[in-house]
Image (cartoon, rainbow, N blue to C red; front, side):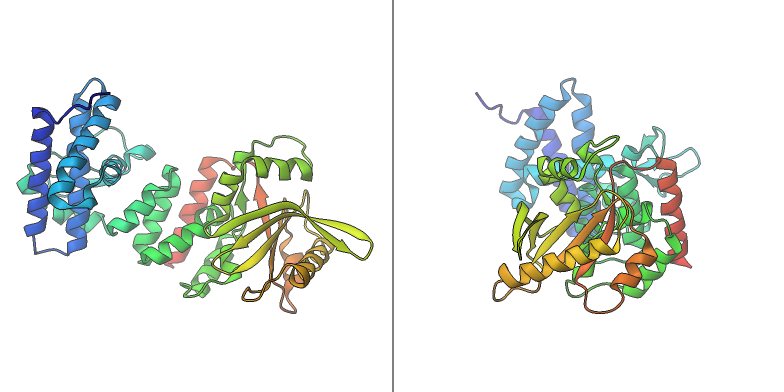
Length: 378
């Protein structure tokens, strides 16, 4: 297949992007990070607007990004790869600076177009020379995060989830490391599905940023398993089989550093054959993670069974240099008082968490997210 070289139209786009890069590099009145965010947003704007002019957008877009990457990498380095240019395009499309009827040219509102927060509005169009002078004023007000933060936001596909993390990262002044930790902990799901928002806020205020990995921090509550497609009545075997079929998505829901070892891990205890539903390894904690699946409400017997599993794993599967195994009991209902009383005394390296196979109504989610933000500010 013959590759199409950059034509006059692409050369024009490349020239406009060159102007943006040079203007941003020479602008010393703002921080480098703010200038970078401004630059990348404007590059995304130029690319998006050029693609929208072409009837065959998908085909032309791929050609444009490939050609621009070739040109810009030669002149400015690997930071302008095709993948990075695509991120800049997505950044612009996800966070547009809009001009409402009542706003002036400088001072437009930031609106997440993909979220349906605002209707179609006129996008600010400024000359490249103006963008680093006039738009930076607006960016300082609205784009309060660094480029690495925005790249993390772009990985959050759901618009509601993205908006929540944007607000929390800006208000709580999260570092990139803390931002990633909160995503891995499933803060969005925990807030959206919490039955006691005030209690959750109190826990978050008390916890603060974690400098070391703790087993309490790697587990979420609840886990959202809507991707399993389970409806109506199902058994623990059905649940386990659905998780294994959708293992990649389940690993994503668990968070980073989880490695799958196997299912139905066999244990011989006295004359009984016992089988652990799922066994994982966590690289950050350097320990085995046992997961027991339950259909129904958590009971004291479930805790005793997990104690037995963890003791066996420590006795037979533990290796020198590793930390002690930890356990996760996933159930449809975890009665809080039962859990607190059973895990109150002694070093119990386990977590009891609920799972959901379907998300609640979106309006209810939004109300809980707003309540969390309000309580956190108080």
